[in-house]
Image 1 (cartoon, helix red, strand yellow):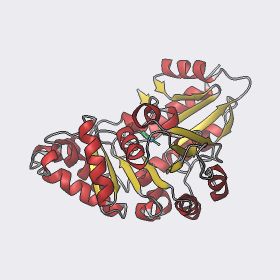
Image 2: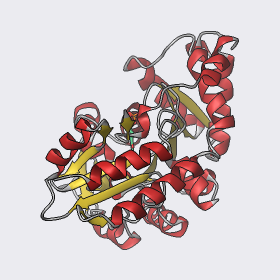
Image 3: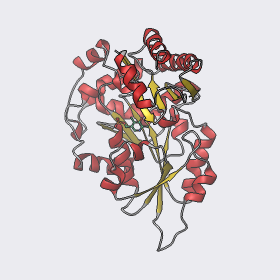
Amino acid sequence: MHDFYSDTQTRPTRAMREAALDAPLGDERHDADPPTLELCARVAGMLGMEAALFLPSGTMCNEIAIAVHTRPGDEVICTRESHIIFAESGGPAALSGVMMHPIDGERGMLTPEQVQAAIRPRSAHAPRSRLLVAEQTANLAGGAIWPLGQLTAVAQAARDAGLATHLDGARLLNAQVATGIPAAAYARGFDSAWIAFTKGLGCPVGAVLAGSRDFVAEAWLLKRRWGGAMRQTGVLTAMCLYALDHHVARLAEDHALARTIGARLAGLPAIARVLPVETNIVIVDLAEHAPDAREAARQLRQGDVTVTVVGPRRLRMVTHLDVGPADADALVAAIGALG
Ligand SMILES: *Cc1c(COP(=O)(O)O)cnc(C)c1O
């Protein structure tokens, strides 16, 4: 199988599994699990935040952050293509009772002017604009990287108007590796931020959400209430620590492979357009005469190549630990053979 469906498809390596074998364990909800405490401290440091907590998924990071920052009836400003809108099962409405205020961004990014225009004047009639959420990198924009100045300016525009700010950093470390700008610099304007361990870092479970001590205390309350508090999480977080030591710098390899794939696909008749490739995501639009995205994905699957359909004529391919140049050859050949 040549699996370009997502960077979530990785299996933990043997060395990663071995890192969990001898980990000292305790009950995380009594602050007694050493690898989990170490991981939270490390990620808080990487993001320039006071504290952090370990959660089962990135979705829970986003949903807990939204719940902590808002009250029911508040409005959340983000781009229309945000993960919190398209892929969290209606969580913001169901769990926090908030309204979404989607904005059409440019490659998954907003300008400070757009944010200012979206913030509602205080009034007894309008919902209260309360939270800005940004994604670094922007998933459905093809892993695009917000320039640091733009990300900071957008966060500042929200803060100037009294809004809270949250950074969905599922692939924040991809941005760090691609640009050399530390994750903490990207997170600086934000009240909360998180990184995923199940994407490019290759772990089976986990994400870490960081913020102020008060924010993390509130987040812990919801983690317990929503059933996210666990016990000997060290078997998971020891693997996350291993990934921080061994799987961050190598994200550059994923980026190089994605760039190669993008360049090769751009020359194929079936492809009308390749979105700029900045990190580990390649998004293409199929040409008029080519099959539509669903049919293309079906044909590719028959050749043991998996991709994601992200629009009627749009496919997404993601590079990760478990795909290499030979898989890229298979992918390019299969797309070349679409008919
Ligand atoms: C994958 C992803 C999430 C959710 O993470 P899960 O661990 O799959 O719940 C959130 N935001 C973005 C941008 C993602 O790519």
